[in-house]
Image (cartoon, helix red, strand yellow):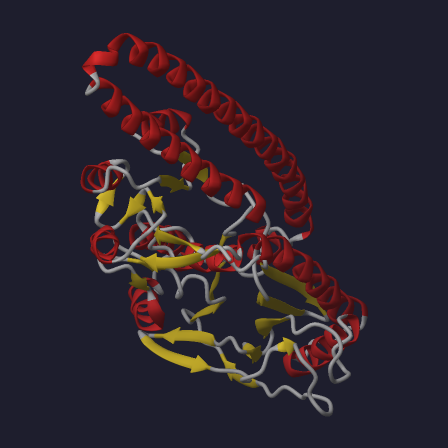
Length: 435
């Protein structure tokens, strides 16, 4: 029985690491053992101590830039097959990497377990052919007595090898073109879905007509979003919500459509304005829709939500939350309303779940924030760590007395500065209301 091949991947992004773990757990990749490091330095040390058949190398590492790390690897391990992984769509970079000796160049998320296995086998075969050519060439060059015969055989062998390389390269390019075409079709469909999703979201003017000093920071991670904001005015009260559905991208967006529809039905059609009652009804409806009320049935999907009802006649704010808080800043002092430690929807729980609420009288100049966890969980900074709640509170304390437009600009600037070259890890939603 053939032993599994050892594959080393140098990748610093935790999401990408998990993606490849999942990918290599597929049955068609079961003949490979995947080993992971997150720094070039650690990867080189691992290669010195272990026998590795193929290296998967990310171009964007904290301790290397573009092809620098690849060149270092090739200098120290010239016979190691290397497949370049990158999120950049740069064909020139692909050509350059192959010219420097890479066996292949793959864009992340544009292949499946079949293509990955094919690429690894191709890298091994190509490296094997190249090593065979080198070996044969050295032997033939040392055989001076058979120089004429050697030259003919070497030429024929080179032609055969080049033909194999050309054929395999053409096959790979065709596969890439096929995947790129499929990706284009998927992207176009997602862009259309994004247009629909944005069309049904309430325009910011719905909130600004009633609370002029307000803003919404909304940055989906993917083309479509699992976070969404919602607002309505009924019975003289303004209801506003920041919602974070399970996941992001297409799964999150599908769940967000259900949540958006249910909020409209509960508030607009049924006239319910008390936040705890809204969340209790929403939780019950989502469990029914997702078949979650019976043990061992249905999905575990759900949503976290921060929802408030503003009564401008009584200067009163009523609030209820499911895993998401409401922040109020008054004269530089922060008050946190934590809500309930259970989500909307989710796996079976015995009996109806009732949500508790809070309320307070607001004063002129109070600033209220509703938000999902994407901003706080973003990796970045000098050490690649999460932004965290502590930094978020400090930032809001610094900006809460500014006009809404300037608060929005400050939040966007800080987010982009912190994120730097890191990938956005989740959908971002922050709603600010200056009373």
